[in-house]
Amino acid sequence: MSEQRMQANTAYAICAFNDIPSRRAMGFHLMILDEDGSQRPWPIIVVRWGKQVFGYVNKCPHNGVNLDWERNQFLDPSGNRLMCGKHGSAFELSTGRCVDGPCKGSGLTPITLTVLDGDICVTGVRLLEEEHDPSGKS
Ligand code: FES
Image 1 (cartoon, rainbow, N blue to C red):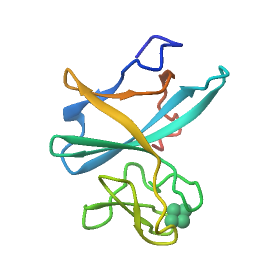
Image 2: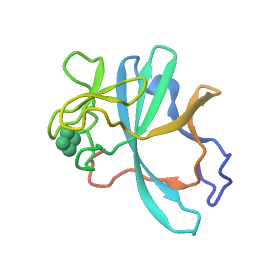
Image 3: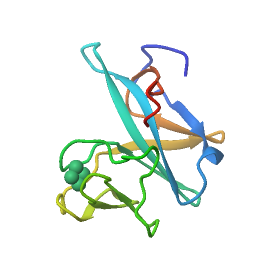
Image 4: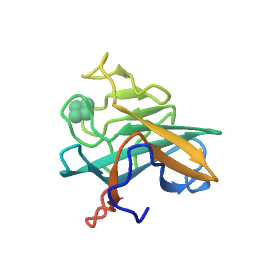
């Protein structure tokens, strides 16, 4: 992903499909380019479940914080739900819907992912460039 100011229908490769083991989730810090040309951080979560991938904005609907209070720790102890590290809200992996906790009934913002040539790609947005948080948090 080296090109800047690409079209919204561009697919941006985030990582290789095999970089994320099945039943695991990983965070990425990207930069989105808004309609007005401004840039803003766009942290996302990518979940892999078998051959499926699901993506959400890494922002808890409760307080707006990132879910992983420890880097890339997104799943609850059962491994079947995403969990916010702050107050423990639990989210369905395949829908992002909050099924338990203080924001029950609301949901994570889904993002559109596709797998192309073995890479997990984001579509439907314009990304400026791939950014990894220099602080090491994801
Ligand atoms: S901030 Fe996520 S559950 Fe409160």
